[in-house]
Length: 191
Image 1 (cartoon, rainbow, N blue to C red):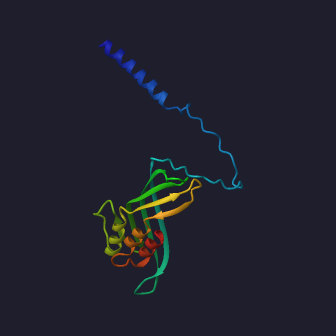
Image 2 (cartoon, rainbow, N blue to C red):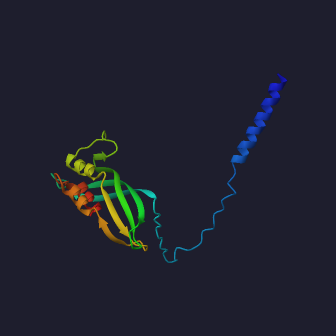
Image 3 (cartoon, rainbow, N blue to C red):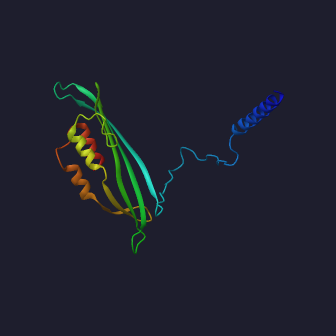
């Protein structure tokens, strides 16, 4: 019995030391002090695209508009949120130039529309069980999944050529038109 008590004290002391050692701020990484003032001129951040790398981005666009109701003409607030998951793959430089080739794929789309009296439509390409009220808009959003475009970018990060625009236009324009505020947001986002 005495042995268990001694072992328990050693165990408790060891755990206490581990806990105290883990509660401090890491001394290995020292951040430089923040310098500059709000009045300083803006700094240009140049993206660095490494060949052979894949970059994942999430883009969300939210819009709010005050529009008249169809029947009464009374003004209401309409909100639309459009989300896109994008994958960018950087290939080697184009033959004979300093241009990089960046391939973009639209991997997922989400959209939600709401007005004063609640949510009117929710779409998530990764979850088909989500409520969808406007099937023409949902069809158009679903067609965007898998869209691939290729951008030719100079070492100064200027886009010199884009391939895949015809596919984008075809996907956006095929089928019944997407009307209303959400259709306008969709068209402006891909314009």
